[in-house]
Every structure is written in structure tokens, then in C-alpha cells.
Length: 184
Image (cartoon, rainbow, N blue to C red; front, side, top):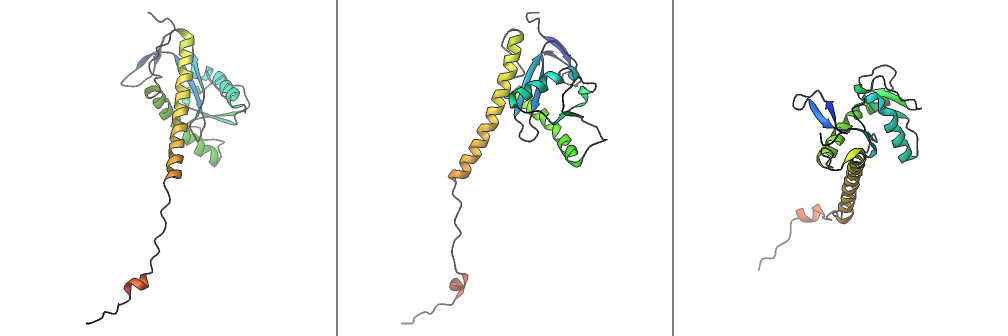
């Protein structure tokens, strides 16, 4: 192969059961969908073994510790040793109502990954080597965040520039009053 860092990744999907490339771990905010961490991993590691590195990168970027981490079932048996509570999708016991709502939001990262693959060109890497994989993941994450910020700024600009229509002052009584006509 011309790119020895490329690994075969089994996806289990009917259309594309296998993909060739590097595995990328992505961490996003739960509400806004901003990408906090994008880390490329060498080979095809087990998802649970990538969690510690991805969360540590997100915590370094944010400067705060994560309270709760929501992951899919591929992260069962993870090696995360931090203070955050790891919630695996499908988990039923020990969840508050807020945790249940936030766990439902976990599926929103699938759309984020899809947009990063299509809009951010994460699906095809033209940079060479392991460093190229890492740079491509970071650039796709930065591009995704910039698109979200620009969309928010456009909405704000449209809201500022479009004046709120003033209510029309009309006295319905004056309009309905019969008018006196002069007969000449």
C-alpha cells in the first residue's frame, strides 16, 4: 500500500461494511454541538481505549473538567479513569430525568460526524502520514465550529437588520361610522 498508516475498519453497515483509513475520536458539547476534541488514532483501536485520550484533549481545550460523558455501546469496557461519569447508550439504571434527556441527545453526534465527513472533507485525507491524519481531523473540527458560528452570526445579523413591523394604528370605529354625504 502507498499509505501504511491506513487500517481496515469494519463498520457493520450494509452499504459499506469496511472502510479504510484512520479512526478519529470526536468530543462535542451536548447542546450546541461544538467540537471540543478531534483526535486521530493509529491503527484500529477498540473504541473504549480511545476514550481517555479524547476526553483529556477536550478538557485541555476547554480548561474545565467534564461532569458526564455520553457514549455509544461501542465504548463498553472503556479505560477512562477520570472524574466524569460515563453514560453508555441503552443504560437504564441510576439515571436521573436530566441524564435521560441528555443521553437522548447523544445521537446528535452522528449528524455532526456526517457533516464533518461531507462538508469538512473528513471522509478523504490528502495529507500524508500519521501527522496528516491528525491535522485533517483538527481542521475538519475547526471548520465545523466555524460553520456553526457563522450560521449563528448570520441569524443574529438578520434579526438586527430586519426591523420589527410597527403595529398599524387604526380606529375601527372611525372606519365603520357612517359618513354624512352632501346632496347638491
